[in-house]
Length: 404
Image 1 (spheres, helix red, strand yellow):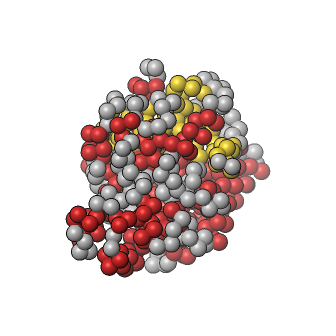
Image 2 (tube, helix red, strand yellow):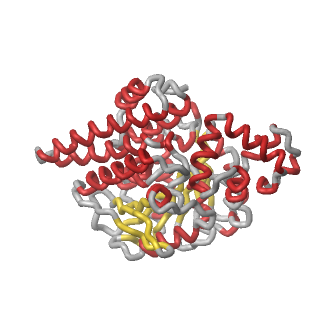
Image 3 (tube, one colour):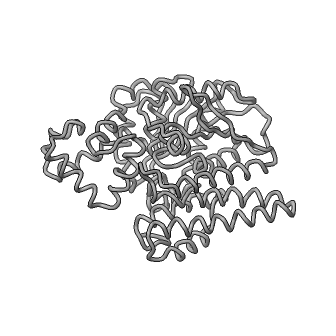
């Protein structure tokens, strides 16, 4: 059941910041107020309501800064950044809507402004990567900023950015005594919006660059570096850990074997024979045409595949999307993971349905954490009770990294 928005897609996007409430990214009344402002409006109204609320917060932050109210200014800048990050999700697509780019630039500026007002001022960094660089921020352990501490690399999924990672888990982990490195990789945030670099299945190439960079950061213990992947990061993080054996621990929220695994049953409902969906990149033209039409007729699938998926994978049709998505699989990789690995499985998260099977394929020290609707944590990435997820995951990680 939705919380604040009348349009189901708007409700999915607009209630995402509920997860940020314990970490200063929003408050419940603010989310309700934005939902009321959107009303029965369209995607433009959604965008306008969130950016207007974000700008009010930014203006208040600047007033606090002028009055030398440093802590309030910092909190307001960061919260405003989260509001801008929420505003443009319905606008995703290869057309690169100018409003999305404008909101992202504002989000990034506000995020940097907030971090610069930390007690230990933080500045953006760049991770060298294949002739370009990826944006990154080191979020240090609170009160232990200059101490040598374990490091968590936080890894995005399909449509989150580094700002989201900050509120997802970086704040919680920094309170626990972890340094955190957050970044946008290919197909994410700046790397997609501005550099137009698509997502890639060989995520180990990305994480190798991140770890190489992390080795030169001050106060990082090289043998205590973990990776924590969210959403599609539940595939990306384990894929990286299967090759990058410098990682001391891997967390996948949820444990995700592949992108297209759950899509096969849907194609069968459209008339495809079960044996014909073993490799969706080989669908016949007639089935592919039916699938394309079914996706176009469903607002949720249209956004996920034709808007987000096409853009993120750098394609312009369903056939090419499936050919790209089929490469994102742990087939042949899961057995190579050596570090202790934690998979999560939320009760009502479609992406988590295969977590148990994924878990069974692991040969490393492993743990599977279940989250239920009764706990308020049954949805995707436990977004309605994110503090529970962070507490249990960090408890597990404490037992791994602090006992090395």
